[in-house]
Amino acid sequence: KSAQIVQEAWPHRPQRPAGGGMPLASWGMTTRDDAQDTSTTTTTGGGVATTTGGATATTTDTGAARRRTAVVTGASAGIGEATALSLAEDGWDVVVAARRRERLEAVATACRDLGATAHPIELDVTDQASIDRFAAAVRALGGGVDLLVNNAGGARGLDPVLDADVDDWRWMFEANVMGTLQVTRALFDELAAGVAPQVINVVSVAGRGAYRGGAGYNAAKFGETALTDVMRMEFAERGVRVCQIDPGRVATDFSLNRFKGDAARAEEVYADKENLVAGDIAEAIRWVAARPAHMDVESMMIRPIDQV
Ligand code: 8X3
Image: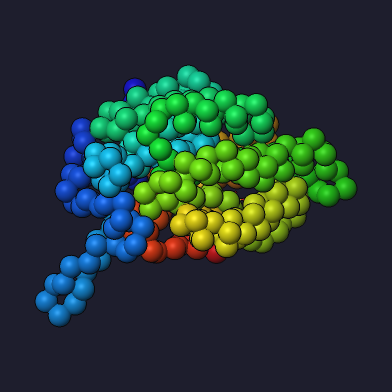
């Protein structure tokens, strides 16, 4: 069942050894000091090779080795699910968060199959009480937070401005803007104390360019872009990096959600096109997540070749 989830989330997934993902040795070890100051550098011949921190860290305050922890929201399907699996494969422990408990359990099981510790915790990013409970549950795990992937969000409707459903607009602001804001604030103290901490916001090409019918979603995603830019400026002084990932058309249940369960309309969006799959975006996120502490990747826009 869990292998099936991996396959569904990422049909083009490269084959890696099952059971433990990449050998931890290939990610190297890093200390908290290494992570906060610079990456580890080694001289090779005439040049200098820089190794990344990887997902295993040694905390200097306790002297105890611990694995790094990533929190992924919207992790029950699509990009969030594929991201959780990729991070698990790379040696991260993961907290997977979303509304659908059953799906979350399945994703957590798939992460465990890859050798990770995985905690499924329910979260509705449009509900402040849910965010508060979630943050308390994460804190209670005691493993810290080194990476937050704000992936929860989405679109509702594709209506012209004059026909807009204001409830759809409100939901999009709540989920994409307020959800990203409030989840990040709720976990910020843990993040700021983390090893090479980083926030990765999964925004959208819709947050960079508007299109007909997209006004509500565009406004929410442009808002999330602005929020992400200011987070980057303000968090840098606390040592927390902020990256924006902007996916284009990715064949997930994004359109099914946008069209409120109208499968025929959703399928039309992806029919006869070179769509990305969730794992393509997860591949970018796993790369950003593995960068050393001094390296700030501001953004990446990723579209299928026929969407440029
Ligand atoms: C959705 C991107 O291109 O499918 O965030 O509208 S697109």
